[in-house]
Amino acid sequence: MKIIKHILPTDIEKNSFLIIKDELKKMNIQLPKETEPVVMRVIHTTADFDYVSSLCFSKNAVQIGINALKNGATIVTDTNMALSGINKSALKKLGCNSYCFMADEDVKKKASSLGLTRAAISMQKAALLDGKIIFAIGNAPTALI
Image 1: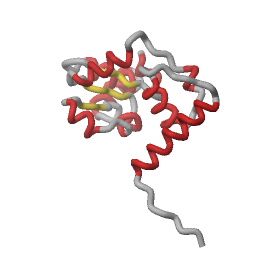
Image 2: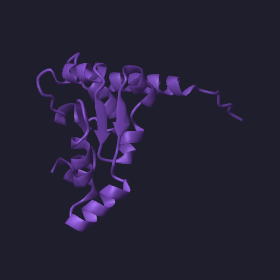
Image 3: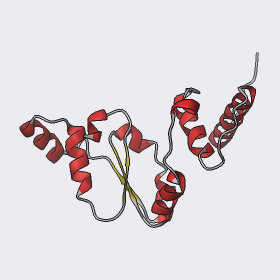
């Protein structure tokens, strides 16, 4: 009988990133230093290496995002699944918050009365927040409207 030894979650994640890095090396892909952590995280989350060629970054996007977080920006997601992937303790250390308004009762009622999606209305609600906001749009495309 094979004995399975206990592996810490942090070790699983660390090993996953090493595997991704190794696969990228085999593919002869060298990511830019600034965007590498983002691309690696996306691949880790999706298990889809096509993101290496399909992700686009505006000039200085990563540094702008880092600066926004260091200055207490709020992250608003279009889905609760995306919200659940955000490290809340890391955000708290930076003085940041994160929200998803998709399931809020007021969003549901307004979307229904206007004939719009909850994603679109939740982003309207988010736009009323004070301060810098980072919008993290995933699989609710009408949030972009």
